[in-house]
Image (cartoon, rainbow, N blue to C red; front, side, top):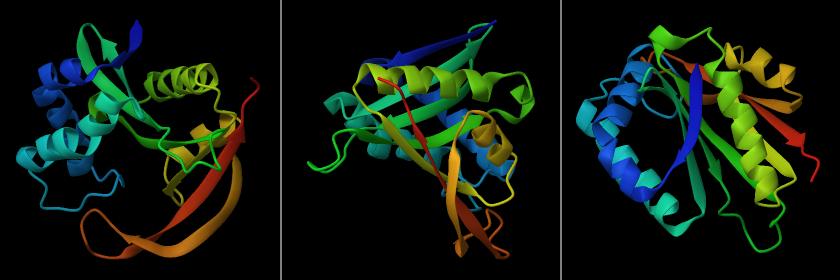
Length: 175
């Protein structure tokens, strides 16, 4: 059974090591989530503490975690820190599932919970980007996300040995 819930800033602090381990494992497995090798557990801890925690603490970012048998197996973030002319929109950020927990419905459960949270917050448009050709692309399309386009040579591969494109997607939610 996969359990999904949002973490407060205090709960993020308490789970920092586990969150860092998750992020580290995903990056080591080649996930394209903005990081390149070498990538240490200290780098992962800094990401959660310095980049994610402030938004969670201020209420502009929602951090959802998936747990299986008590262990964190995945996360996704809803970034609601949008300009004044975009109060209806939010960004989906950093969907990640531990390599050993993939193909068990965790990513889909996280995305459905994220969409419910977005709706609860009055956000009717979600946007995201993913590495072109990544395994997440069919997941997003299966959840109703529409492709806007592809930007070629957008980012370095995790191993720093080449560039890859990014696919931009969106979804309208019913409020």
